[in-house]
Amino acid sequence: MNNHKTLTLLGKVDRRILKKMNKEIPSDKKNTWYFIDYASHNIKLGEGFDVILEGVKKTLIPEPVSIEVKEVYDQFGTKIKSIPKGFQTIVNLSFSNKIPIKIDNLPTYSEWIFNSKSITLAKHEDIKLQMPEIEVLIYKYLLNIISKAIEPRNNVQKKDVVDFLISKIRVSSPTDAIEIINKFKILGLAEEKNKDELELLPESS
Image (cartoon, rainbow, N blue to C red; front, side):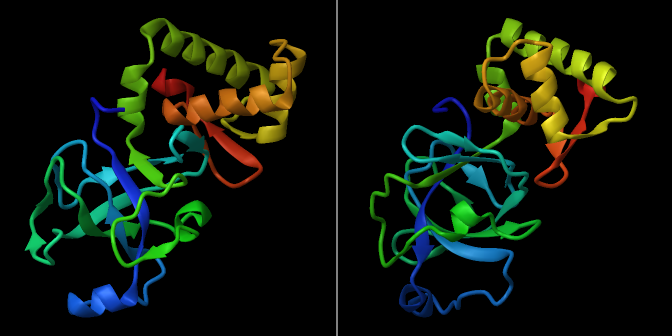
């Protein structure tokens, strides 16, 4: 992930720190302040992220998100126009939908503290670029098979996709099937409409 833009959320900012910055905890449930670890790249205001990864191992959290950088303060409490590469910052993030549970459950800190269960924000385009081209092609081919076999329409039940992968593609377990579905989402080949339903996007392939 070092070659692509990411943001690592260590925890939420304590209200006493926000008060010193003349800020308050937002009443809007789609908008919160976070302690951000050393940035991998320069990141501008308005920049967006749509993939959530958990912990040191950066395990994918399969939840559709759209997150935007709204405000940035440096370690001295000065408002700045971007997140500078290599700096820790305090950042206000805006969420298009409700804040995902894994992010909302981050601890509240008064400073930058290492958190083994931190949340890393990334972009699915960048993760896609990290995959070998042959792997991407295989997932695209597999999605086309599924979209033609299950239903004529693109909205399908996640359970049906899992059953198809196990019975027809010989995937060994439901866990492995869910991992394949998560790869579809990372590659922009599928979107999760709700916890039970997927929209397949074979036209992206």
